[in-house]
Image (cartoon, rainbow, N blue to C red; front, side, top):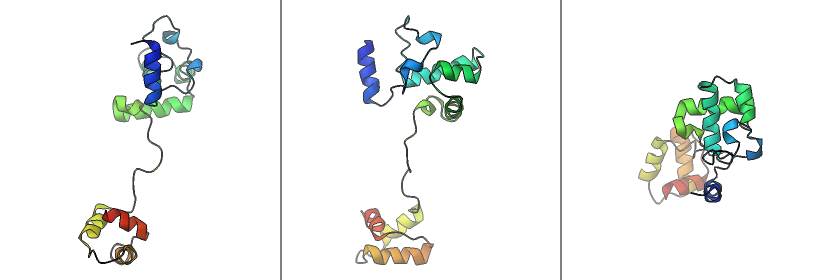
Amino acid sequence: MSTATRRRILEQVGLLHPSPQAVTAPLFDGHEPFFLPADKIQVKYEMLRAHLVDGISATAVAEQHGYSRAAFYLIADAFSEGGMRGLLDERRGRRGPLKLTPEVLKFVSSADPTLSGAQLAVEIEHRFGVSLHRRTVERARR
């Protein structure tokens, strides 16, 4: 696969390094086409490897790979928790509705279909102590 193709694919899937020009680690000097400074996952992995295997300080490897020291520690923690998947960036924002617990969803699905979303929201607040907007209840019904 050519470098241009690889770069295009990385861009399509959102895995381009935010500042590949800041990657100054010797592996990414351009002599070896396998090591691409634009490949965010590869850069993160090699940064961790340089620290853990080669014994280079966290500050130095972070700088050589275009990251801050704080970012290095976040990446290291994510890797220790999730392995290679931890090197992928987390999706930003909430991971779904917070108040719609399985119990509330079960109640919504078994509720009288003639009740409006607003009426059902009132019932949920009385029964579970959770305040939901009528539109949230209506979406949960679908």
